Structures are given as C-alpha cells and as structure tokens.
Amino acid sequence: MGLNRKQWAGVAVAVVLVGGGIAAATLGWSRFGGNINALEVDLGHPLAYVSTPALSRLPRDLVKAPVLRDVLTEDFAFYYEEHESRLGLQGALKRIAFEHDTTLGDKLIELALDEPAEMAFWTDAKGAPRHWVIAMTRGVLARTLQGAAALATNDRQLSVIDQVRINGETLPVYALTLSPRRTLALVAQGNRVVVLSDPGLLFDSERKVDAKSRDTVAALLSADAKTQAVYRRDFGLGEAGNGHTLVADARLMSFGYQHFFPGLKALRFDLAPGGAVLTTHLRVDKPAALPAAPADRALWSAVPANPAACTLLPADWARARAVTGSPGWTALADQLEGPAAICWYPRSQFQTPLVVAQMKEGAADPSASLDALTDWLLPAKSTKLTPAARAGSNRWQREVKAPWGPHANGDATTYRPTLARQGRWITFSPDDALVDQALDAQARRFPSVADSLPAARATLAVIAPRQVAELARREAFEVLPPEQELFRQAAERQLVPRLDALAKLPLSRAVADGPPDANGWVAVEWQSLASKAR
Image (cartoon, rainbow, N blue to C red; front, side, top):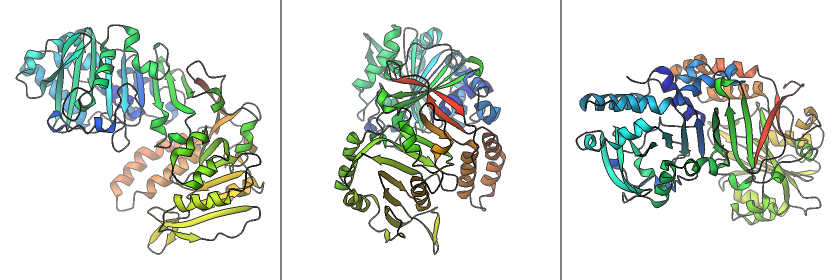
C-alpha cells in the first residue's frame, strides 16, 4: 500500500508552512563531504518546528482554519503529490518490501503519517530550511527497523552506514537512498524512531559521529517523555496538546538581521483540530521588548498611512552597535531608542521597505554619524545625488544601478537609497519616494498610520490584505516577462484567484493579549480596523 493523496498532502503542507521542506535535494551518503555540519547545524536548536497529532490531518485542518479557509484551496494540500521525492520514497519502500518479502514500506508510510510526530528544520547554505528531523513514537515501526539489519546487508537502497552508541546501546544507523542526490538516515530505539534528511546532520566531514548531534538524537530516542521534549524546551513550549503547533524562530524570519531586534525570539501558530481556531503568539526576550500604549503611537505617527504591511521591531540598539565596524553606525546606535518600524507599500516594491527609528530626547546632531554611515552603507561605485532642500530635514542619497529598480537610466534601472533625519526621526529606504512621504508624515503634511489606529492598547503590526495582494500581484508579474507565457498563465490560473481572495479580508492590526508568560510567549489578538485601506 502506498501513500494516498491526503497522506502525501500531510507531509507536503507541514513542510511548506515552515518555508521549505523535503522537496529540496540533499547529498547522498556516497557523496557526503561534511558540508552540512560545516554550516554549524545544531540539532538541539532548530529554526522551525512542527508538532502535530497526525501529519495527514494537518492540511485538512489548515484549509478549514479562519482566514486560511478564505485563501487556501485543496490544491494547496496536494501540491507535492507528484513530486520526485514523494515518488522516490514510495518506489524505494515498495521495492524493498517486494524483494525482501517485508511490510516495511507499508508500515513506514502509515505509521509516519497517522500518529503524533515532531518535525524540526534548519537552513541550508542558501538560507532555505531544507534540513530536517522527524521524531516519533512508533513501536511497530521501531521494531521493524531494529530487525532490518540483515535485510540491509544486501540491498542497494537500504544499508547500515554506521553503529552509534546511544543511551547505553549500540544502534545501527540506516541510510535509505532515494536518488543519487538524496539519502535519509534512520535510527530506532525502543519504540522511538528518528529520521534525518541527510546523514550529514549526524556525522562530520570525516564521517565520524558528531557528538552534539548524537546527544540530541539520544534525547529524542529516550524512553523518558521529558527528555524527548528537547525541541519543546528549546522553544519554551509546554506539553503537546491535541492540536497542531507551528513555530518559526526569529533567526529564520530575520534574514540575518536578528542583531537589530533580539527582543523578538519566535512566532507561533496553534491550530485546533478540525481547523476551528487558529491563534498567534509571539515570543519576546522580556516584557519591555513590547511597546506599551500610548508610547507606540509616536512611532506610528512617523510612518506614512496606507501601508500594505507594517510591523514594529523590538530593536536593542546597544547590542546592534556591534553589527558593523562603521564608526558612523556605532555613534548613531548610541543615540537611538525604542522599537523601529519596517513597512512595505503597494506603490513601491518588496525589496524597498521603509525603516523608521527614533533618536533619544536631547540627542546630539547626528549629521557627522550619518555622513560616515552613508559612505559605509551605500556602494562606493554609486552616484552621489543632491536632493532638493526640505526645511527641517537632511537627506543623504545615492543612485545605484541594479535590476528591477524603480527608476530608468538608459537601458538599466536604478535605485535611489535615501537616508534622512528630521527632528528625532531617522528614516531609510532604497525607494526615495517613500522617504519623502515619511518626512511629510513626520511634519504632519501627510496622514500617518497612527491616524487610523484606536487609542486603546499598543499596536504591534498593521496588515492591509488588499494592498498586500496588489503588491504581490504586481511584483509576481514584473519578474515574469511576456515571453515566459507558460509561467504567466500558471500565475494567472493559480496565484491571481488566491490574491483576489486575500484582498477581500479586512484591514487589521495585531495587539498583545495580556503579558508574556514565564517563557516569553504572549498571545496576539487580530482586530479588524473600521477604516478602509485606500
């Protein structure tokens, strides 16, 4: 018996939701050269985590969840049904079962999908979370694997690649080769099973077991439930309930900029069985990382109205001083305080967000620091520009040639990254028009986000689905030239209807629902705003 549509959907959706998954190729053991551990993958501290009572039920619950049911379709759940990885796994297990007269294939598939499991993810060299581990309690499957050593001695796809001392026992590590580019590693002990997306997560460049990875695998295989919960402890989670939990670490979401907002640690979604309830939580370093009302309104008043998406970043400027060696940045960071805001606008681009930060009351004139910072921040080969004078503000601006820029320069396109200071506000964007609009908002010549926000409770983020859909639609077709007709047709057929559905959702803001718990988790409430995005 092979995987049916819903079972494959379970695996696919769980992986897609954390931004990557098992669809990406990894090196087989025969070609393993230690490249994974060279990236310092720490199996004890994942960048994303999924806990589910059954992978096969996750997609069905997702498409019924609030908000998601308006945007997703059944096609989302079945996306990976015909993927080569799915076919490779199914084919390998069926062949092994047939040639060796065993039911390994059926049991591995059934038991992996229809019972509780944990999945943890790490990024590869390109920043995508393609390395993963699955941990599960499967008595029948574990015993089947423990008796598979004889089978593995003469099989071309299933083999024993090493013996590892774990929890007082010497255990075989099995390699299941799905293709020349993909080899899974499996370890079982008692009624526990751990599956790794690549042997390189457990072995170093010399094919010796990595001590830290071994310790994590040993904990996952332990018979003690508290010891097994290594990932839940790492994310500050309690005992697993009967719903699905999906967590993304801030290191995964920050794209390398976590030094600027270490106060934000993780984002979590909890999905109730049947998709009845979908809740959001943030994990913060300490309560002070979240702004309190009405202090948040000062920052929202410095941001132009009608963003597609806008969020506060709990910046720690003292720690951010060490991010660069620029003297200008070090001096400027000493004068900044409070959270920053980062916003995307439908009239601009994904790659040109607006960033606004606030200086301390009575801070010294930062012009010299901004001069030095501009020289460090912007490319040396860029062209210096002199923006038209604006009363009460200073701007530093250059023109940089790059693909997809908003400005035309002959046959090329350019960006005009602009850094500005007005009063206590420091503003930056690769799109100069957004900076000028922010300066107008700060001078009360243009509406700000604060003008449409209720006074009660601090606002953490604002989402305008219609503007998000507008921005996503334009950006998607911008990178699909007319000659790529098939891709454009696919986008029209698959993407556009989903964006149309997204655009119908209301303008909303996120607010903290109570203080953080002992592990830093704070519930986030999404409130519909009465005003409409323009």
